[in-house]
Image (cartoon, rainbow, N blue to C red; front, side, top):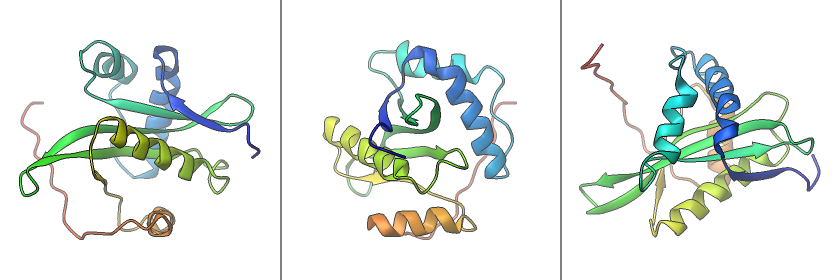
Length: 155
């Protein structure tokens, strides 16, 4: 990829493609597929609340095709007594990895944290995702081992 690849904030028109990429991401991570109305749900979180509850960054290939995304939102750390930016998802479609878009997405996430005056970004990745682990290690990120639990309260 050349210098024409870029990362930018998502606009409403991007959300159907972001939802497609999220479905591919869920499949890659061996998870249940996203809600069928994901694009509308994301629109509500991104554009229909003040302030927005979520940030979404999209990666564009040189041909203008959206080939990846990252979503993040502020969360609270009791132990630190401050917010951190939780990177919920980062995904690049196969064939677009290893061309510099991953670091561009992470740079944009870090810029989002700075814009929000948040000092730290935190995220998780499956332990079997060796490519992601290598990528995050190359960035200088520190791995912290924990289990992630989920408890459904409304069906």
